[in-house]
Image 1 (cartoon, rainbow, N blue to C red):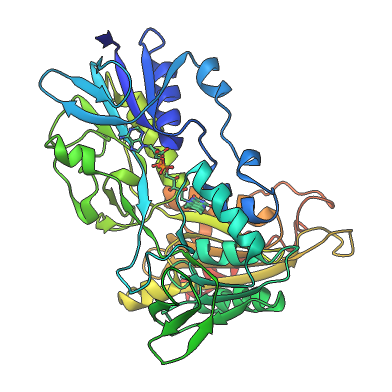
Image 2 (image 1 turned 180 degrees about the horizontal axis):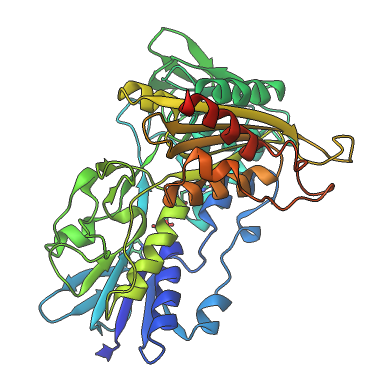
Amino acid sequence: MKKTDVVVLGGLSGITAGISCRRHYPEKKVILIRKEGTVLIPCGIPYIFGTVGGPENNVVPDGLLEKNGIELVTDEAINLDREKKVVTLKNHEPIQYEKLVFATGSLPLVPPIPGVNKENVFSVRKEFDYLKELLKKVDKAKDIVIIGGGFIGVEFADECRKNRDVNITVAEMLDQCLQLALDDEYCNEARAKLEETGVKVLTNEKVVSINGKEDAVESVELASGKKIKADLVILGIGAIPNSKLAEKSGLELGFRKGIKVDRLMRSYTDKNIFACGDCCTKESFFDGKPSGIMLASVATSEARIAGANLFSPVHHNCGVISVFATVINGRAFGVAGLTERDLKKNGINIVIGEAAAADTHPGGMPNSTMLKVKLIFAKDTGIILGGAVSGGKSTGEMVNVLSACILHRMTANDIAVFQMGTHPALTSSPIAYPIVNAACKAVLSIKG
Ligand SMILES: Cc1cc2nc3c(=O)[nH]c(=O)nc-3n(C[C@H](O)[C@H](O)[C@H](O)COP(=O)(O)OP(=O)(O)OC[C@H]3O[C@@H](n4cnc5c(N)ncnc54)[C@H](O)[C@@H]3O)c2cc1C
């Protein structure tokens, strides 16, 4: 039997946990076990179908493991004996560990609707060969229906339409696409950008069956009675924690069957077992309530915490802020923290500050884009609770700034006096910098 200090099971957050462990404990031997020969950049998966042109162009380089002295075993962990601290693999000898990290991720949700098992119905699995097959199907398809208008669904729609003569429909059962992430005005803007490309967006439409003779897909039927022609269906309706092995080995599961962890990322059941990423439970940064958010930002932060805490506590998990960005037909949309819709639903008294400016100065610079920023503060305290941005490439980093503001519980006053670095070709003007100006406007309302 092989012996090691640390075994990590998984991909994206597994690699991050392994690197973090080696950074903090360079004397420890780390083995990463993962099912896939190649790890795809999960957030890059939609871009396989358009911009990057294939799964081979969307890969996390294994050089990272070598560079950090982590041994890779490509295999599936099929059993875990917690008493003996041994992981059994499908094709290799068992491995004994001192500490174990679960980073087994999530599996796509497949709704129990008639026709979902037909040949041309695909979920979004993070598997190289599966996605290569889906790419071939997308290339041949004439009528694609995407079920789910969350960020995965809209990114797939936007990418699949590129350089193809294909009809694409997104069917979303909520009032808006991206409704779980963005406020209405941003959802409307995103929808308009997607529709500009010819993609059809149906909202308030629940899919009830996928129809066709035998294994063929011919149409998708909606609760309203409408039928949409389809020869390929892609499911983008969410994911569930992949915690079966953890459950089998007696680890306690929590919200949505995630592996129950504490703020040090240790499992509740076994202090030698840690977990991070989509496979474990999460709590909201804002109120400590269970959170179902699954994002790479959260997964990798948790992985850094888990890796660092393996042999002695270093970091503490502050909970999920939820920060992410997407691009639709060239326009970027980003969000950090809570939305106006969520806050109003929960009866929280808020103040909103909004501002817009070109992301260069003068705005006539080549490739200049109009940036729109919305900041949301608690009325009583002036503390920032959320923010949204739409614009060009800088959107991604602007919501990261907002995430840092939220993490440090900054107030509108703090943000209003930010000294933002600016340059004509790179940023908005220092007079009109939209994050600062939105905060300045909110300060007035909070004072009032
Ligand atoms: C299409 C798509 C787009 C996304 N875009 C974004 C985005 O833009 N921004 C963002 O923040 N998030 C995005 N996400 C979410 C993000 O990808 C996930 O939150 C992230 O991948 C979670 O990382 P993880 O390491 O926990 O799990 P995963 O990435 O799911 O990795 C788990 C790994 O564990 C392996 N594994 C499982 N069981 C075993 C076993 N028994 N033995 C060995 N190996 C095992 C799996 O094969 C897999 O490789 C996106 C997700 C998808 C599907």
